[in-house]
Figure 1: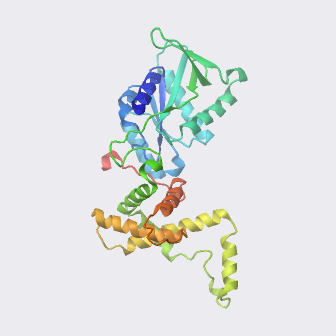
Figure 2 (figure 1 turned 90 degrees about the horizontal axis):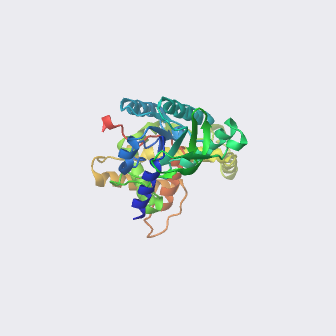
Figure 3 (figure 1 turned 135 degrees about the vertical axis):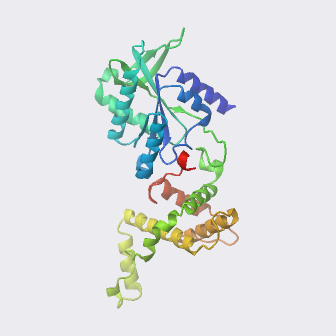
Length: 336
């Protein structure tokens, strides 16, 4: 019931918007869309903003931009924390609205998207840029709009342009995630379970043979390995020296941890002799990888505890922060 109510509220607000910025996660350009509202959104003047481009594979990102362009859909990849990205987006917004033949002196832009795609970060960045463009008295000016017969509403927004006056709604529209199947949607980890999400991530990486791209790391000597010249320094002294170098910096620690995770996923994938097309065999590989990652993450093994929750959580943290590398998990439609 609350999902239906949220969808109705968004639909009502969309009626007031002259242009919609639909924010999606650049790593999942299709899965981060709300399918139920796509007919409504596509009927509006719309810009797709693929956020978190810094975490997405740039080469594949260009292919996605070409795909949306071929579908006659305005699209831009951006980083909501980058002023350059936001200025490019606002430039596109002004261009699209100047093309429109509207009688209204005030135009309204609405930002929508499912949870966790970066709507609020985008709104905040727009606010900062709006502050720099216009005097204080325009910062929080309320845009008076009434595009519907007999309807007049005051909506708080940030002014981003004049002639015509363009305001961006100061509250993002939170679209309820649409989950037609287990592979699509954006919901809290607690709803699905971190272990299940991590297993799905590993299944995608293994099917695409991504871990095999890290084979070079198997033969790479890590910084904290003992140097050949240190062969005479056995025992605690050498161990202390390596530990000191290892703990010099948190960034170094994370970098070394990522390399060890990549090496572990690669070695387990190379040792696998089963068939990735068989679900049971793929699941066996994933289980062995999570077991191996427990050692990497130094998670103590407890008797009778078969849960991979802690290892799954740490793996997802590395992936979501972009430490494991840039990825796009969705397949391009013409490649499916």
